[in-house]
Amino acid sequence: MNLKLYIYEHCPFCVKARMIFGLKDLAFDQVILQHNDEAQPISMTGYKLVPILEEKGRFMGESMDIVQYIDQEKGRPLLTGARNPAVLRAMHSFSGIYSLLYPRAVMAPLPEFATQAARRYFIRRKEGEVGSFDQCIKETPRLIQRYEDSLEQLEPLIQSPEAVNGQLSTDDIHLFAQLRSLSLVKGVRYPDKVDRYRHRMADMTGIFLFDAIAR
Ligand SMILES: N[C@@H](CCC(=O)N[C@@H](CS)C(=O)NCC(=O)O)C(=O)O
Image (cartoon, rainbow, N blue to C red):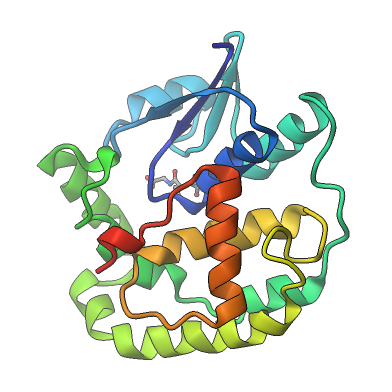
C-alpha cells in the first residue's frame, strides 16, 4: 500500500484526514500510534503531532493539507461545494470540546492507550491544557448543555444528511470530525437532522461513531 496514515483513534484532526479516504473510497494503511510514542512522529515530521501521511517515504503533517492533497491529487476532487460560515460559527460557539473529550478518551478502550504508561502520558499532557479531568467530569452537565445549544444552532443549517451545505465541502470535514469525537459523550440530545447527518456521514466515511462506548 503506498499511502499510510498515522493516527490516534480519538483525535478529531485524524478524523479529518481519514474522512477524505473514506469519501473517495481510496485504500490506505492506518497505523495507530501509542500516545506516549514521541520518537516515531518526531522522526517523520519533526513534531509529536498526528495525523501524518506517508507516501513513498515522504511525510506530510497537518490534517487539512492532507485532505486537500488527497482530494486534489487522487481522482476527481469531491470537496467542491461552497462553504457556509454559519456552520463553523455554530460549531465554534461551543468551545468545550476538549474538556468533554479528553477525560473520556483516556478511559475508553482505544488502541492508542494500550499501556498504563500511554494513559499516564496523556493525562499529564492534557490536564495541562484543560485542567483536572475530575473537574472536567464534574462540569459535564453544564458542558453538555452548551454543546446542545450549539447543535440547536446547527440543525437548521443542515441541508442534507450527505453534505451539510447540499454538496460536500470542507465544512463537512470540520463538522463531522467534531461530531465524531463528541460521540464519546453519553447523554447528548441530538436534534433529528444532526443525528441523521452524523450517522450518514459515519457510513459514507467508514468511521464508526463512539456511541456504543460513550460515557
Ligand atoms: N494542526 C494540526 C493539529 C494536530 C493535532 O493537534 N493533533 C493532536 C491529536 S488530536 C496531537 O497529535 N497532539 C499531540 C499529543 O496529543 O501529544 C492538524 O490539523 O493536523
